[in-house]
Length: 238
Image (cartoon, rainbow, N blue to C red; front, side):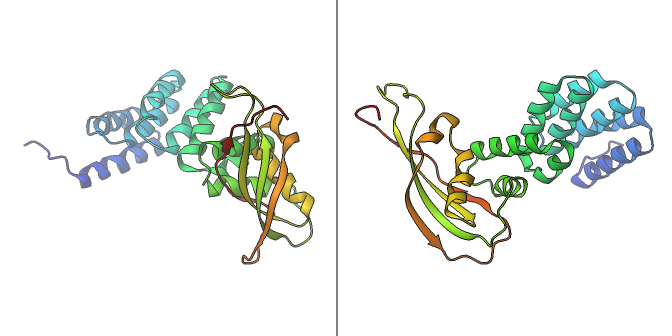
């Protein structure tokens, strides 16, 4: 009698696969993983990769995860990063951890697995990919040093000049960007905002407008909102 594959059966297979991995029955777990793969369930890749790792088959684990990351989320990217690291492929590991960060926003975990500077760099990269990334901004606020006074909340309109001409532009354009920041002093406002601008353009930054916002009591200083860059053409170099 042919077994009918239902969502409930798929869930049972997934649970069995992870249980077999936990029991060290890696060959049996691989069989379950292959069944789940035929059913098109993303858990297949994690189960098979963990089984290959249990069998000391690191290259096979990496190949399985590389196949699976396009179909699943953060867990596979993070696991793939660990495998790349174990294999000595540290550049690939860094890229995989970054994808994990961007995929499901596992910022807190990265703080414990990576250095403070690396976690900051990854969080800044996440904000570049998605400006409304509240978790990445929260991690940056947590890791950057803050003042001791109670912060106030500001909306800043910042003006600057881009570091190089854009395509079909004869001179570097000017730009405006809105930043909402909690800071304890006027100088700190711009200091918190500067890392979110290109390094070569930071010396040109100037505050065009400052507005104090009424918000609930804030715990951490730092940036809470970033707008996109609004570029405009300039007639001549500054």
